[in-house]
Length: 108
Image: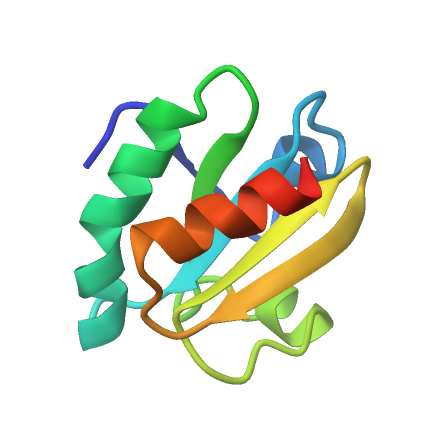
């Protein structure tokens, strides 16, 4: 996993995501989730490609149930872009790198 990706918990969510100076792309995932594992290398690349513009973060939904419930995360992987403390958009499922890049380019 990329050293540029941070791990967020229910208790660190407000500080790490909502109060972040840069937009945060948060990946809601679980260890048992096949599609989550499929997009992990894509997120590593996105973290490197967008290092100066966005923070890429991951939250394990099994270990941190409160935040996914707060944002109605019903399926994983779910990517939500947070900007200035607000959810700006989301992508659900195993997405291609081009889809994530286009999503970020349209929101940043």
